[in-house]
Length: 401
Image (tube, rainbow, N blue to C red; front, side, top):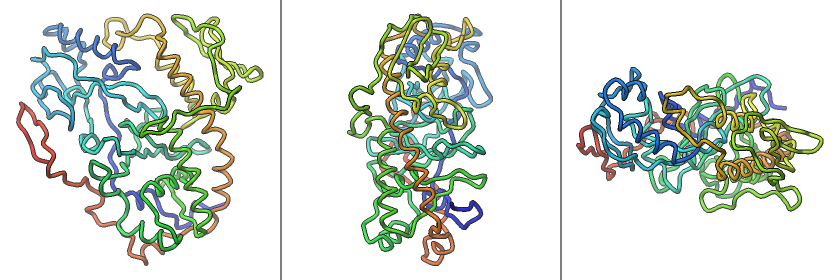
């Protein structure tokens, strides 16, 4: 087993451009469904004066009088929200934590720190790597992948770092240390692509207090094994995005609704012997593999967190309280899909452990320095300029980025 004190490269060495986690500032801008967000917006813009300010929830970063640029690629107002009377901008799918897919209103006037540099490169070619942070004895994945724009936070709300795979739209300019891909290609005798580096990181990354460790193997066969494993994990994490197939368990193991879920479930229980998930009074889903129920990130069960976010009491009279009265059918479909993805990821844990044990003497940071891969140039740690990308600034002005 590799010792943490070894001279192991950090993800920060391999994928140098990173962005801080988003800071939403107000939780009503996110919801499991689009309809709730549109209803919240409509209620807000119909209100006036002190009532609009109360519903909005001002912060040091955003008030009703803030005038900020539109998010790249999104049509939204740029004047003070106190004057807003228009329709809600089209909500976008959003990764809320490691595995929860929800919806977000893409209006920078509502978000304390939306990280526009991420929106600028978020397209159908992009993948985002998210470091989950260090927690002693946590055996969950140290690195997750999202095809959706992620908030970059752990299940406990701790901010991590978001690392886009590409620095420019269209899958251009990989976010890799200059010289890393040629160095690895020569060492392993195959062409190493940016997706390969990310896949290896997903399979082999290990958390540490210093950052996310990514040991690089010396054996080409071990590299290929890890890339294949990480590619499978990444495909499950993005859940069919980028033209891939939705995760599916083999016949006979696929979860089904055995008893109708109640309109307002308040409790989630798991029966390990029967492999049954009890949803509220009477609702049953089975079979639910133990791997899905026990899947944790940062010490938090993902299924419990998903359920809690959709059923916890909301303060009456607030925008977060605006939502469906009953349990929507699409929510059940999302739950079944999440169970499937987590179960399949859980089954890969033994292979992750075998890979970790196999990498005993990785390539060192000293070797990367000798090869000219490290230190990373300062320019590689900053966003790339997108000179042909026009964006609407505050008050409707346009900026060239």
